[in-house]
Length: 128
Image (cartoon, rainbow, N blue to C red; front, side):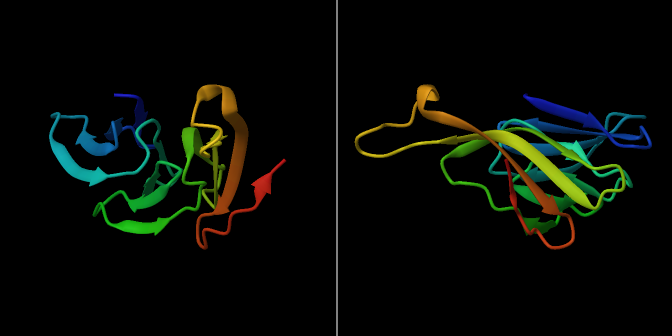
């Protein structure tokens, strides 16, 4: 398990275990939801507790439904993600990894990367 986060009200916990997200109720340990993600590392709650994100996807934290996909290079990994204070934006950090016939995917070919999306639209300008 790589990512865990408490809900803003402290009543639930979300975990990311190799791309399987679980939302648990803290009071009795009950498993409430299971979702599948492309990201196997990180997870974050929106400040209002309505959403969870892995940086690749945005999920409804009540139903587990996929709200939208967030664009990221297919050969990159997201290793950290968070919402801004009012929940209107998501920021993810990770790497874009070159993967070409002459330059196989490797850590030495990774380029640091951060992306920011509006929660409502998934527009994704690259931060530099």
